[in-house]
Image (cartoon, rainbow, N blue to C red; front, side):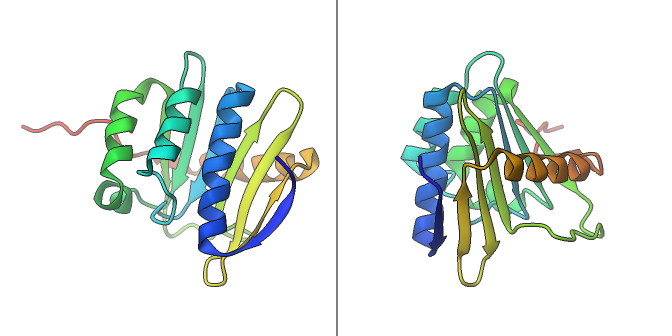
Length: 164
């Protein structure tokens, strides 16, 4: 992977899938992902699901953080099925929509490999501007932001729904 800027929806989605594949190849133990709804992520694409499946092993954890997960359920049924099958390695938390998200990126994916850290950030959803960074200090700042927000969230997006 190499650091780069992007300015299109297609590039954002391509880099997401590439980062997931990189995380699988590198044996990343944790992935941290933030988006208000994950609606624009290619979560039901075959390549993304293959990368996630290759990554999901014992001891791995995908931390999802969003304002709501209703759009995932409607728009990404294959990912919802994957989430059910790999519930052991996925935590999903929702942030109160009333909470002020100052300095929040539109989307964020963080991964730490054996020798490199990756942060993929979308700054502007209208122009699809963002960057893929390999800077460890930048990833650390983003991780601190993610952790602070996660502390103000609650469990959400259960792997199964119980019917009575």
